[in-house]
Image 1: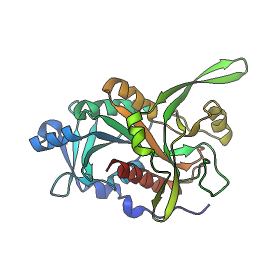
Image 2: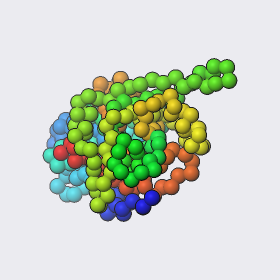
Image 3: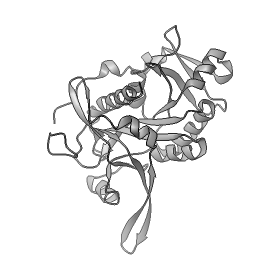
Image 4: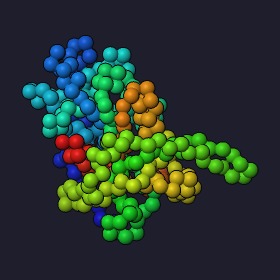
Length: 280
């Protein structure tokens, strides 16, 4: 397939991001900064460095000096960036991969921010590779998945010689889903990608060693358009932190160890900019 467009201008390097960040403990915030936190409706969750860079490349700082504020949470177990997109105040946090760390960090951030909504932004693997170039229900590299639900596929039971996957399905937030359901395609740098609204994302902290292993697992999740690793942690944090959540991710590979990483920057950038465009 054709390579994705170069989006490096929208994906700043970590060193460049860090140069614009001022670190503060929650107690050190000014009254004005604390008021801004009260206006935050959305926590944007990233897991990997490329996801974080893509989101940071799309948002604006709240300070007049052009710097961002990284706030260390009151319990000192996490931190978040205070930012805005258009008139919308947001916070950004980076959790690392996997559900447990995601849950722990998000619970800490939500205690301080008390946001109404949490949106996981980033990249995922696709369930089925399309052999056609038309925009259809089949998935292609770069496509964006607005998940209707998350399916936890981590639990299984042995029945004779067979291993049966015991799935748990967690619906994403209805109000958030309404925000993102109106676009059929998204375009960036001349590349048009499909936006899928009718499927689920499988969630399990596993790297599949082969296409066959992935397909064996996904046969228990017929509606899955792809999969990722953090969403179960977001669901568990929501049970404790009382927020509505959704997972929106772009397909950058087909879920096996033989990964070609060339689609990761494009997928992360297009997903971040699609989400923020819908919030503005």
